Image (tube, rainbow over all chains, first blue to last red; front, side):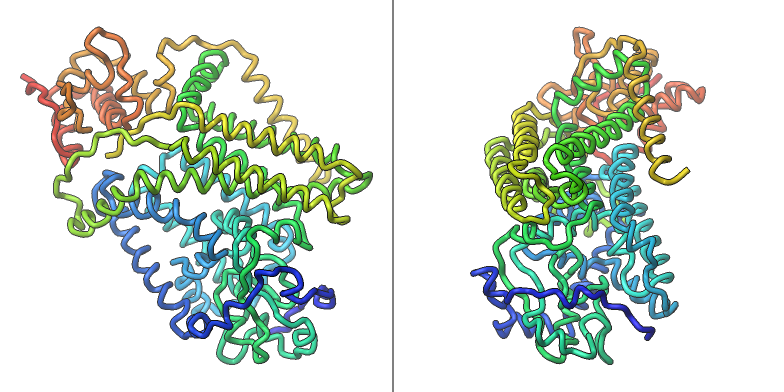
Length: 471
Length: 137
């Protein structure tokens, strides 16, 4: 194995876990949890299950009925997995990324190709932007080609992601695709930062004295961290997928899996990134537009746009709106951070305060997805079973023509308000850090922007929703 | 030219393009707002207005509207109310739109009503009960 560089931040002092969070007790002290994490079946058994499900999604997507409401591929992917994903991130961090069905093919490809290169400077520097671009592209493509309502397109999208993941796996060691390119990684990393669990080193002194750095490099029997993390310096969940390899490989037992106050990482983060703040603002737009799209106000807006401009093509009008919205939100955030920052500290302010907006977006995303899960999940489950019993999709299914109410205002609005409050609190905590780049008393611009966004989201959920029919 | 300068120029061009499109005069569409819920919806209502009515009356719909409290008789009822105004049914139903666009493609391909009907029946029979549309003579 070529020499692997570990950055000098290993010298940075770090407080003991219990000193920073009263909740921070080690889950690995519970014997069944430790046995589970170090078991040879974890994560392999879960990967095997998800790989089988992935195979079924691709098979049914390509060869079974074209009816999305009755096809295993669309039902399982978009009505079950997709709504549950953000919830899993809040509860368990990026654990999904460990059991992702793309992992076994990536590992197989790497065993065959045995790549020796680590990701270069370009990927390390611009990976976060690449992820943002792939996420924007998939979001846009979904709108253009209605991927979520097409079993064939769903299967092709997953196969395309698999192909890309394998190509990257052949080029680079470990999981460069998951760390730098995967479109889902955009928000799995950001939302995992709010998780109630974190995997960290429990002893700076032990790690500093460690010669082998097995958590990063791997041992004779266990590979190194797939996402290129060194446990000693890790201060964020964004690139930890809880695969447990560092727990298995550390000869000193210096790795903890501890509970923590959800979200505290957002204001304690030592390495805020400009690119991640950009991703957060992009998520503001994506989450807003995907919800707005389901309201009657969206149709009113499109009617106005197509009736009063030279635009005739609906998809072009959507694309321009999407681009304009991203530019507008980015522009406003830029002004907010210019106003809020101390002289010469704009970049630090832009990066640090970006994380304050995550609780609000997460709340909207969770509420939106969970409502889909409640209203469509049972039907999706029955569709999945029906699909399995009818693998060629030739039998006639019972008709479902009833409209599905898309969102429930009664619990969406309180959830958005809770998220908004979490964001305001996070902004205040970030402003207390000298490294946040804020001028004295300059928390105000962020508070105003957060309040405006919260009001806009609440107002969105008070609008009448379209009824859509499932087939 | 460095990357930052190029990005700024690109951004300015995009903004100019958006402003230019927004400021240019538009055509007044004659559809009600619900038609604009999705691209498929708008496209299919546009197609519905351009197709001869006998195409819509001779093509069945398979979306389940045959078993609705007021059963539809053909694809025409998914797009128009009995009084001739636009119905909002097809705006929220992808299947009605897809059937209509397939019928339009067949019609533009020179197929007669009987052939259009056969194409739609063979493709969408898997969706279940069709409307009680009279057979094409």
